[in-house]
Length: 218
Image 1 (cartoon, helix red, strand yellow):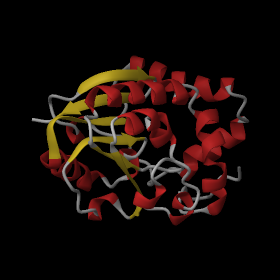
Image 2 (image 1 turned 180 degrees about the vertical axis):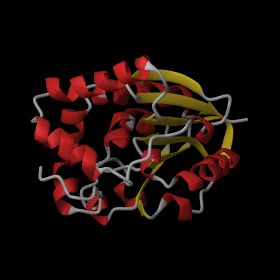
Image 3 (image 1 turned 180 degrees about the horizontal axis):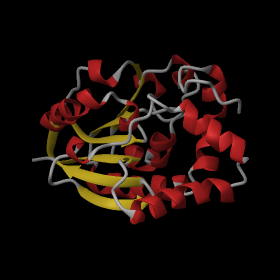
Image 4 (image 1 turned 30 degrees about the vertical axis):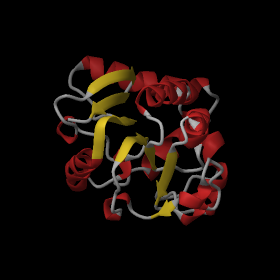
């Protein structure tokens, strides 16, 4: 895939190659997709509603499709890229919302998933978005977030960053493409910060500078 000078998902080139690209750059992608699907199974009730925020081509929707069918649940995919929406192959494509998530009027729901999404939302909008979603979450529901986390301090943070880098190198990505992607993301991708999340977020995954959290309904 040709890396754009400034990273965007509103590109046919990126959207067409997204599924292969994300698995190449994040070797744990399918493992964590499976973990998210298992978590969802614990929180989706009969007749429930799920928001897949930053749905891309339908990875999470397909991972939880069996649970959706079994429990007659509804999924609402949300993505602000027409290019991605055109390639959405997940369940219930008639429900897809092509919109900036910050502009969506959410209905009550049971589960919402942000899979590699918040790091592309402007930092000043994140906390209010999460609080708004939590206010619409039904009792017994949860929000699942998987994202790049802000680096810590000290030598350990250098080591964990290199873990992520090593994973990309092990996937066979040429070093010039790794550098080009990092430069492309400048100012577009901002890792999630500690105060973006509520204090009761429960971490369930961490690899290098990526992590996953569960936030339950109050």
